[in-house]
Amino acid sequence: MKIIIDSSPFDPWRILDEYQKNMPKLDGQYGATAVFVGTMRDFNEGDNVSEMFLEHYPGMTERHLENICQQATGEYQLLESLVVHRVGVIKPNDPIVLVAVWTAHRKQAFEACREIMEDLKSKAPFWKKEQLNGGKDRWVDKNTKGY
Image 1 (spheres, rainbow, N blue to C red):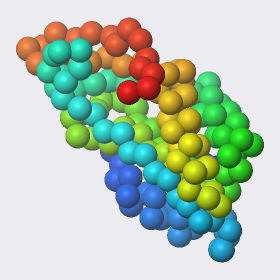
Image 2: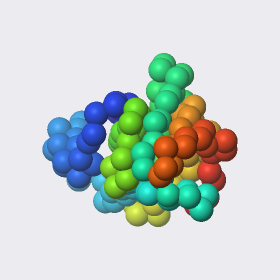
Image 3: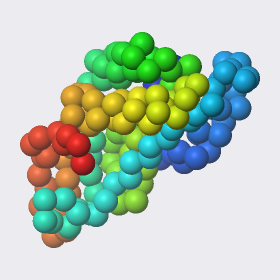
Image 4: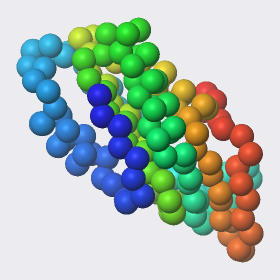
């Protein structure tokens, strides 16, 4: 399991490729890899958004993400997992989150990836401040679930 939270832009496909090449030896053990990549969109709640500032609680956020992955490992027999999450200033089309899991079977991989992402999105300690077109900003007052 690996958790990365960073303010630098990232290429999710490069990170995934490098991680899979260098992850602990799982030769022949996994039959499925499920991947989710979330990107920033330029609208929310009916308004155009020019950028977002994403904050987190260092230490607490990493522990929360580790707990999510540990729970999924037990429930879905994950062989490996990777979560990369961006913080700081984010622009539309920038990748925000990468979740990848490796399992023996596709059903477990799909369900684990979705469960990790849903928990991350609805419960993890991240806070978003959106910059709207025209200069106004606002804090997003609720996490989303199931979108």
